[in-house]
Amino acid sequence: MKQTVFDKSSFSINDVISPSILVTDYVKNIIDHPGAFQAFKFASGKVHVIAATVLSNGPLAGKRLSEFREHSPNLDVKVVAINRDRKVIIPDESTFIMPDDDVFFIATEDNMKFMSELRKMTDKPHNVMIAGGGRIGTALATSLESIYSLKVIEKDKNTAKLISESLSSTVVLNSDIADENMLRDESIEDVDYFCAVTSDDQMNILSAKLAKEMGASKTISIVNKSSYRNLVSKEIDVVVSPEDVTLGSLLAAARTSDIVSVNRIANYEGECMEIIAHGNDKTSKIVGKNNFTVEISFNNCCWCHCKKWKRNSSKSRYRN
Image 1 (cartoon, rainbow, N blue to C red):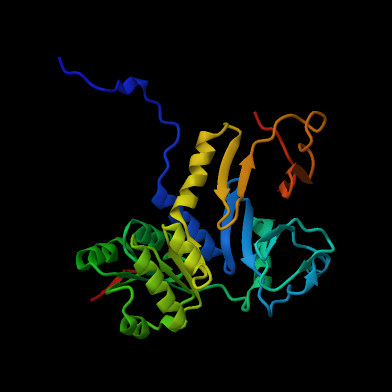
Image 2 (spheres, rainbow, N blue to C red):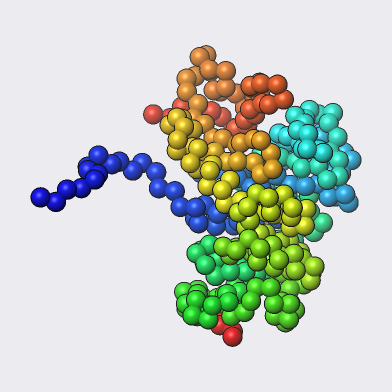
């Protein structure tokens, strides 16, 4: 009689978590919000939390938060936290926004145009170059090619050909991702986002730094080792930790059913969570309220914003 170690009938899978899909979505969300170094979606994409660094020559630098509201009175945008010199500030109307501040905003999808206030240029990105044609690189190219002018660099010849056949309008380059001559020939200075997404941390860092030095506007790099992330966080515009991105989904699955999603905040001891509210305006401190702040512990708070709380029962080209 054949014996099995586990009885299949005793297993129940409630959540399937794919790290590559999560990282792909995370990188795409960053590209879709130029100027952000972190971007999270909540409420099925209706609400966004965006983190961006204030430019020294930007229109918000040196202004009070109240001036930001006066400057954009019709925008439904809230500044929920400011990180200055690695200290978290919970702002009020009198708080000044200073150059190099990391500012965390919450806004609805319709009000995301405020991000132009934090960038030198208001134009949306057009040219994206992806370094690495693995699972993440291919998935990212698939999700972006209908929106941006796209190029993918893949060193393996057979993989490069397969990618070119699976995409419809993307240029696939069979080359080393850190080939300086190739980057120059492909006009790296015109690239709005260079995304290094291979499985090799060192190659990702090297190619992203090289692309930046050669004129790429913004660089995104996947870096797995935390020691590497700390070293290059100032040299690469957006450093993506697959561990942090994946851990958020694991935390949401492991916690109570009322927690819809959890997102780790890079470089900070914090999380952004979407939680189901119960009760009504008489039994709950939050249901029926537009804005509220709940003190949890010293120097930490939970801030939420919502309209209303409700309790509801061409062909790809291949180059060698």
